Length: 615
Ligand code: M6R
Image (cartoon, rainbow, N blue to C red; front, side, top):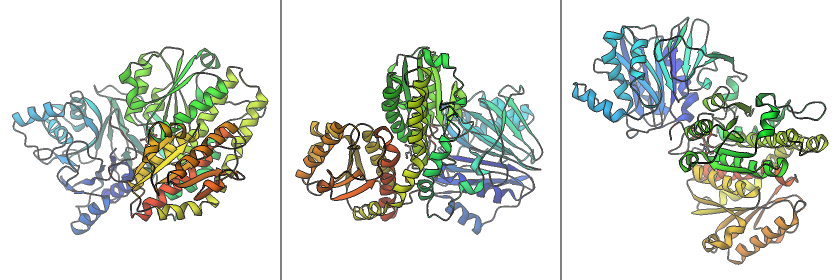
């Protein structure tokens, strides 16, 4: 939530900052603002709505030229998305400007006290209080960095803060607690951002800051301390993708590009995992085989699309490793007092590695003594840093709010974890594991094939643009796929969409079926457990008898479904457990096409943000 950029260097700060905001806009797009230090003053501009509104305002009134600046794209928490509530916020004297990502939980008390002491706050935001607190601390602190440390000690909640001060025109000062912040190291210039995408066009050398740290950024240096001024440790790394990976590359939307990148993302996530002798070597796991043999229960925590990967993981882990596995929504997990101990392995799945609900679930599990593994796409993000081990997916940057390639690579990662557990626990022989690995190795080509034959999906999606509701049915691993199809449609097309386990239909949802209601059915392979296939064929007949318009996703060669499908979407034949890797893809295309037909911006759906860093 919220994108943050800071720059100190030789170039016009406004250009660098606005360019960085464009790359971070997926994090929040309710409003945007910038501030530049120039000629001993702060010049700023901010506008409600997308970055385009701010750009238009800057064309009308360009800011003064300066080489130090900060910028923000907002996902509103406190206060509506208006010009006034947009960041940056200034203190009473106009000499300090602040931008913020997160929620300051004690802001009401801080604000009341500030007002009692005579400060005038103009917005409804929690952020503005910080500008005024800095103003109060500045005289005694003797500088912005120390003032920031003092203010941070008074704040409760989650925050990344960036501030500039006219008294020190060569610096940007930032702080973080429970919210992302990275430094980009350039030559004679340095950057701050919530995500490396903001500065990847300028440098791939990054510094990951730790929890409760303050950084003072200058043209040729940066200094990191804790909130009490002690020097603090940080981690330097090199980003292994470049600016082109974070651009649309000729596609109309990032989502279309990311859907198309899936075969490569799946291949990259599989790369180098299996040794020559067929055994899996998940080096990043960092949990010893002994630790893993000790595990007697697995709990997966995740949100949204990642939780659907978690549901599929349950099927694979229990089937291959014979360990009991539960999937919990991270936002519910810690509130129901789960039973966890040293023999529990908690697996947190998160594309961004910053989802606050998942991070809090991880912390709760840690307090209870559980072992922790994360499956994550963003190197150095908060969740993997707080876990014992991490398996990185190699999807590359995912910019569209709707998760696509991250989901497929999460599936690959959970399959690998399930097989690894089976190997370590001696449940499967090496040749059995090798057989599944070769099936996985064939998946990039199968996903490519789905993309080649997906045109009928686009056609049917366009024909449904004026429908009010679409239902999705699946069984076994097709059930989470149905949930994922419905989630995609909700978030992109703003339509009522529900996913059901097909067997549950007769326990209530079948009452929703009436003439013409579109129902997408994910059919399991007829070559797998035939009982599953037969049951869903009956379910299709049941809904068709009640007037449903059936859109059936079925394996090539599955002739039993043909007579019951108003629209038939073919997918390649793959083993039952791996089917989500191919059956999800048409549903992504379906939602994207339908939303586009309705005129929606699929990269930035309303009310959403890519990375949900508040609970
Ligand atoms: O970054 P995460 O994987 O932790 O994000 C979890 C969800 O917020 C995310 O998957 C969300 O549901 C997507 N927008 C769905 O497309």
